[in-house]
Length: 79
Image (cartoon, rainbow, N blue to C red):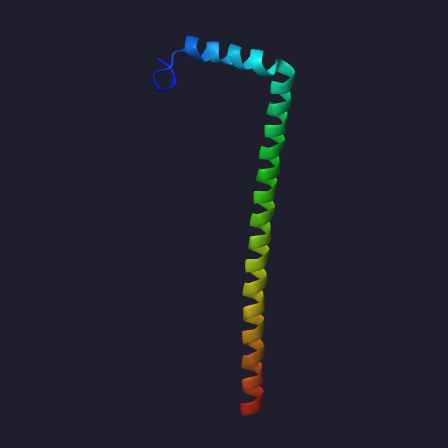
């Protein structure tokens, strides 16, 4: 038994039919195009995570710096 009740022989027959319809060269191109698309997606996800991390760090640093400045101003005006 294979995937979902499909035997290995049925999968091989389907593969042979697909190879006859499209040819091995076109299937190779489709495979390489799909691989490049997956690589591009992964790199975009990584760069998006890095941008999100840097934005969170900048927001956090900016908030603390603004808070410190306002505390200094309050001390100067009171003192």
